[in-house]
Image 1 (cartoon, helix red, strand yellow):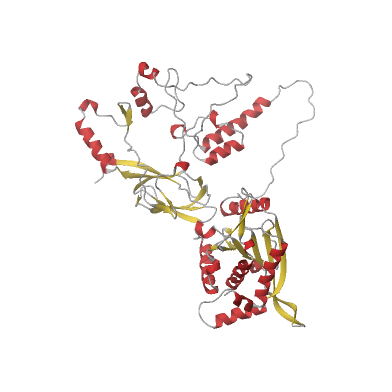
Image 2: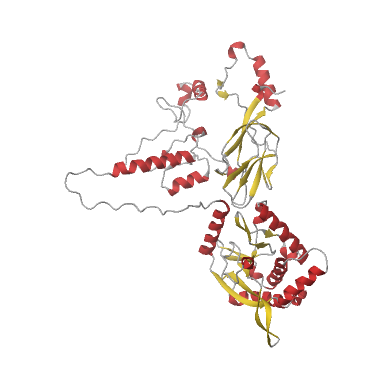
Length: 511
């Protein structure tokens, strides 16, 4: 049985969810304070800019604290849970042996004590190499790589008359008592504090070099965007760590102090025309750009900024394609969707025009032609527009494509798509005809190079075999990155797609 003295707390932080994601919103807590959790048990459901994810906890024990209510957005690395777990056997045995061999006068009081210049406390040290395995697919709780470790500047040595910022704690007093005397301290290098800079004195505005410890990169970005020097702040987090609340408090304090400084002395003389009032904010409902909506906005904006796109389109007679689909489904077996037939047409056209299955490396100024086709398709859900990706579409037949489209569409509808299902696309098929529209000029899904748009298939007058007839007509549009190819290549691709739609037998050449 684990005694209370053998328990210590471990803090579980929001892990790196991959794919460049820096934050997530808490959707639903799966545990309450006081619940007993097992190793790798899901404890919270979060929504990222790409998918809904259940996050498992790498520690087993009793939940003692939760951080953040449902609907709260947290950056990666923020605390999620505190779990009380049993102390490792080696630590417990060493602690018991030390307690039994020590004289009664040397038994430490509750809290932190100093012995031989080393501080020991009730909380056992964490084993940084210990982990539970994969928290998410491809990500675990083992010690992070060196590039992800936060580097903190060394704390300044204690000097007479100087005390680090922050309230005194039992640990601070214990460390102060354990410091060596003046003779020993004199031999130790001490970082000298610089005097406060005088704004009027030239050359005193430069700051001490070295990194400033912050709780996340988002805090550093918030300070940079508002022109705030982090070196002037005293962090309220552990070891002086600067939190987002510290930055926001400093910004609010600066905003309230600015009018007082800039206010001129009131003169009894008649004043001139009143100052122009600040423009009022527009009234109406404000919808924050976050989650899926924010990710879509960022990606589309980047596409417009970076990609010189062009669009070409053509009308095609889809009567024979619709008849071929009807005959396939009448023959028995799994049903073939129209989207699967169009996807098979796309992979056949990309085999002939591989320039459109590529991406642009702007740093190297190179066009990278990709060997595999990972076909994305636009899907509208209650959470917004998502683009699931059919991996290895070039190697699938029509029946396999239809089954994969059905699986991903259902996952998109239920919100169970994983980040892996939403990334890695090389070409996108956009069937906006389901919204009842004929044409569009879609925005390319960055960093891809092209997107094929398909409008609705409707009966229209059409000249067929020299006679006017009513046929099933569809408009096809291709938006492409003009850096990867010219109009001749794009037109050849689109014409091949239209030929396959009008005469499905053309596909037999590539089956």
